[in-house]
Structures are given as C-alpha cells and as structure tokens.
Image (tube, rainbow, N blue to C red; front, side, top):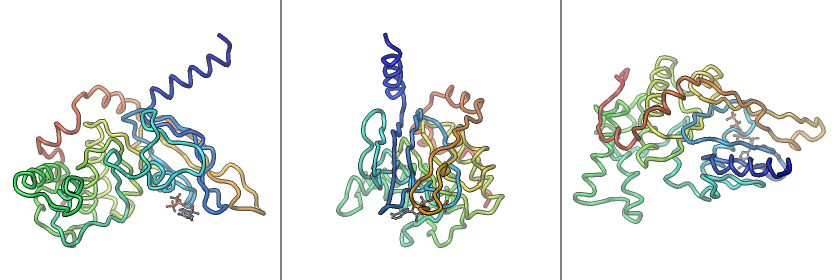
Length: 283
Ligand SMILES: Nc1ncnc2c1ncn2[C@@H]1O[C@H](COP(=O)(O)OP(=O)(O)OP(=O)(O)O)[C@@H](O)[C@H]1O
C-alpha cells in the first residue's frame, strides 16, 4: 500500500472513531473572517476547555457546534454524520447570563424542557405525563443541589443557584454534548468552586462530551481533559478582518481524571433518576 493510501485510510479510521469531527471549518461574516481552517477530532466524553483573546471566535465556534449557525466553509460531523442544522436535544447549552422563564417556578422551568417537545403547541402535558415530567425535573434539581427550591421563582435565586438551574435545564433532555459559554464568569470565586465540583461530578458520572469557553485560564486547565487555545496566527494591519483565529494549541490535561471517568460505566440517566444529591449546596 502506498504511503498516500495508508494516510488516507488512517484518517478515515480516525474520523470513524471520533464523536465530533471538525473539518476545515471557516466562519466569516460579510468579509470578516472570524475562524479559519479549524480541524479537530473529539472523542465522546472529552471535556474541552476553550480559551483565547476576547473576540477571537470562541462563542462563534460553540454556535456552530450547537447548530445555530452553519459554517461558511467546511463541515462538522457528529458520529460521522453532518451535525443537525438546528439545535436539537443532542446538545444542551448554558450561557453566562442565563435567561429562565421568570413566571415559572424552578421545577416548571426544568419540566418545560420535557413538556415542550412532547406538546409543542400547548407546551404542557396533562395528567400522568405531566406528573412524570415534574418528577423527573425534581429529581434532576435535587441532583444539582436545588431540591429545596423547587417552588421558588427565578427572581428569588442567587447567581449560583441560577446557574445550577441552567445546568439542570440543559441536562434534562439528556444531551450527549454540553456547551458552556463562560457559565461561571459572573459568579463569586467561592460559588465558582462549588460549580466546578458540581460540573466535574456530573461529567464524571455521564458520557457527556463538554465544550466550555472560559476567560479563566486556571479554570480551563483545572476542569478540562483538553485545552484548546484559539488565536490568530496571521495578521494584516491593512486588512484586520482578513484572517481568523485557528486552534493554535491543543493540550491534553488531567489524564488520570479522564481514565477514572472512562472506568465508570454507569450512564447519566440511571444516576439522575436516583435523585441523590452528591454535593451540598453552599446556600
Ligand atoms: N452573527 C454575527 N454577525 C457578524 N459578526 C459576528 C456575528 N457573530 C460574531 N461576530 C463577530 O465575530 C467575532 C467573534 O465573536 P465571538 O463572540 O465568537 O468571540 P469570543 O471569542 O467568544 O469573544 P468573547 O471572549 O469576548 O466572548 C467578533 O468580532 C464578532 O463581532
């Protein structure tokens, strides 16, 4: 077999083994090249932290993974298939500034995620189905340390509690990929530490693949199994928008944690339904 053939069959094999493949992805808005030549293979269960200068396109990359936007060039594959063109239950998302439904209780905010897809017109289930959705929501909220706040309304929650609610909302659909955009950026350091513990626990007991944008390099190193650095390598002072950011460093991290997690077979669904809180909330 020629060298070329070997290389090509190796790349086919690696694409087949990857959970998410990013292939020569570019994103540009009216001549403003934001991302260029992104190539990435991610295995299921990896925890990728994304860092880079402000405005270099990290959130744009998350939107591409979410399916909110299509790349200008290149493709994103989920298990070898083109990523669904719109957000769907395979991907959950948590933003820094979280928008909950203020008129719904904590429990209903999470139950809604189960009710909407099954009753898109009314957004409500009835009878046993509704009870079941609310029970599942309560179990998950218990799990993220909000079991005591089911009946509260979002305006009564602290920032950390709101992010717990955001995480529960993202997880209720049992997504396979969790996208986090600066989720703890607005929280005090002590609360951030609690949230790190919660996130690592949830990740360790699930098969979730995580992509998390952070401005805090220490957070990126601490949480991830892989740190992706976005940066522009080409600059033209005459044409500042001509070139976009690439992934300039791809650093493996926390190999022991990754191995420990891989050894845990139990999936998220089974654990969440036990409703056993693993951490004590700091409120
Ligand atoms: N829909 C859009 N239309 C036009 N330009 C956009 C759009 N979305 C993003 N951009 C531009 O893309 C660039 C990258 O934005 P993005 O928010 O992805 O960066 P970021 O790295 O996440 O920044 P930060 O760290 O400050 O949140 C910015 O210059 C932004 O103005």
